Length: 257
Ligand code: COA
Image (cartoon, protein in one colour):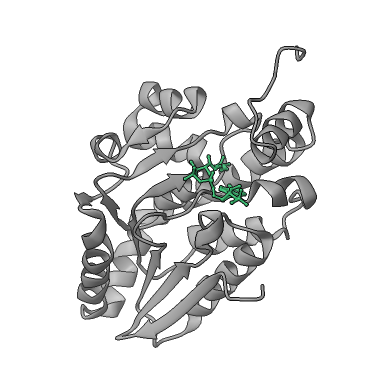
């Protein structure tokens, strides 16, 4: 990365981790996943970090996985950067706060399922277009979303792959509160600082207890989905969908069975 596409800043025991690739809508590359995994893993063992805060910019959280990267360097195993990123966030023992505004697509939505508090811009457009891209849900979303909102609503979001509003994300329990875009970051930071000032062991044990009963299945689900996801990336449906996005044209699935 010529300029840092993931920027970290530690202040008042809050580690801010910011996506910083605005020209590509903060689309996440392999190098960015590696940087994120390293930041989360280091935060876990650094006593100076009590809370992790994940941010993008007010007009864009992240457009999800970099689709050009998907074609050029498809993830291929448990040590892939994206897998290391997912495991490091799902298993992070310290509380995680996210401020998501503008655009949140794909893993930009599913990563929110692994945060403890999520503040969202009221105009934010969310989308999990996995099926439209010829791929399948990831980051344990096929397990966590039905538990969170019921099968019918999860199926609607994951099968139709249509964009949905921040209001719907709030109704579905995906986020804690909606705010004007310009206030998302300050609110998320204030909540992160509030937690950082609380008894750290009590916070860590509370988080451990909240996750304890689902964590093994979350990790199993991440691996199980990834096996399908990685295979599907090589299939004609995904190649056509992703090439069409890169070529700024409509995909044509008419010849597939
Ligand atoms: N991967 C790679 N590049 C991406 C990207 C992604 N996920 N999302 C956006 N970009 C790039 C665009 O190709 C464009 O690059 P260019 O300026 O070199 O042409 C730039 O970022 C700006 O994107 P653009 O599409 O012009 O912005 P927009 O405001 O019109 O639309 C989105 C924003 C997020 C709705 C649209 O970019 C999009 O649908 N992106 C794909 C999201 C996606 O499918 N993610 C993967 C989920 S698994």
